[in-house]
Length: 87
Image 1 (tube, rainbow, N blue to C red):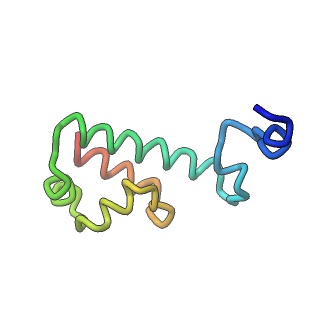
Image 2: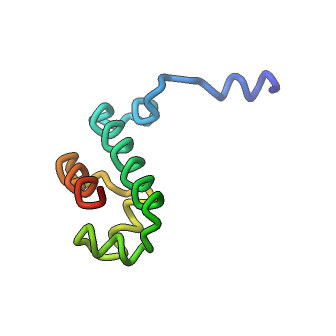
């Protein structure tokens, strides 16, 4: 790695949200782990996306947004409920 690139890159912590000035960093890190677990469960059970959305009682577009990392507005409690529905 060249010196210029090394000056640009800086590792701030193991929490990626801390490096981008998100106020609720620990909450977002926990929620991202829950979403990761949810997606792994869906994949392990080989649910089609439509089937998973129906099971979770959300529309397919919402499930796809969650899979793309757009889950900030969803409470941790709601995400945990989704895990229970898939389990």
